[in-house]
Amino acid sequence: MLQSMAAIGKGNKLTVLRQAPPGIYLDGNEHGEILLPNRYVPPGVARGDRLDVFVYRDSEDRLVASTETPYATVGEVATLRVISINRQIGAFLDWGLAKDLLLPFREQTGPLQVGQTVLVRVYLDEKTERVVASMKLGQDSAVEPPGYRIGQQVECLVTEKTPLGYRALVEGVHAGLLYHERIAVPVAIGQKLKGFVRAVRPDGKIDLSLDQAGYQRVASLALRIVQALERNGGRLGLDDDSPPEAIRQAFGASKKAFKQALGTLYKTRRIRFAKPGLELLDNTTWSPSGERIPIKRIPSR
Image 1 (cartoon, rainbow, N blue to C red):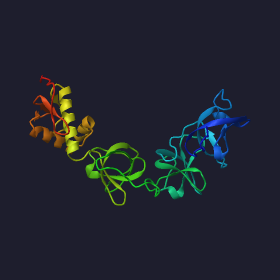
Image 2: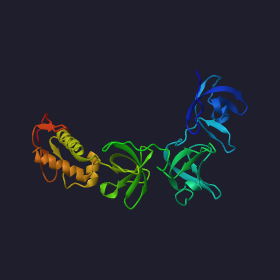
Image 3: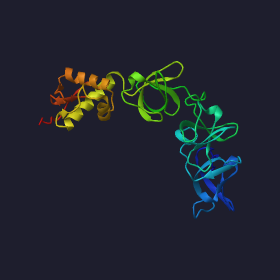
Image 4: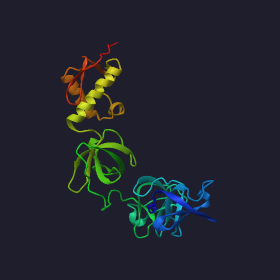
């Protein structure tokens, strides 16, 4: 079976070709033989064995392999610590390997200091075939235009605070924005969140929300509130006066969405406000489509 060419900056499964004083040589296909230094060679390895290794270029520009796993590989985003700065070429980051990761000056968005942590994307420099880092996130012109649906749930990585809100990297690729007025809880740079697509603008940037939009959000949340009431004997300590943080912790929703769901339940005579808290009133629940579903009512204490 033909072996594919070793991918630089990523994990590979490569075949052992031969042993030598500096280590063992692996089959890199079109890249030729790739050295796995002795300090990484597992005991008992023999010719023909296949090993999981990470491939990159060393300080002498040679392709080498390692059985260590970096904190991030090519195409991934990570928060890494600055361990040194070379005034000629840039900063060096700790990424979990013996050879530090270069963050060139041209890829920095501001001055750095040793010990500082920075959010970077790891990429392969096409000219040098070296693995390097960039602080310029979501600005790769080669990335495909976003094809997300309105209301689609996506993974968001918070990258920067702006006057309008927080910039975020959507699914590790596209640029998005969480507006301040739509954030009910504190967020931090480098934090990973579940978000929802509110709009995709003509420039390809994405407006985000931490809550589902419209009827789907309200109906789904209302159903979860009823289920929580059932689990707690028909009573709940939260109501429309509860702190946003308590609501977010219990239901993963903003206070605004929670109040909208309570309004729906109150209008359909499902709940009453006990002040403090809520009480469940009848013996049916309803699905997100609006269909009534019989439930087992738990008597109030």
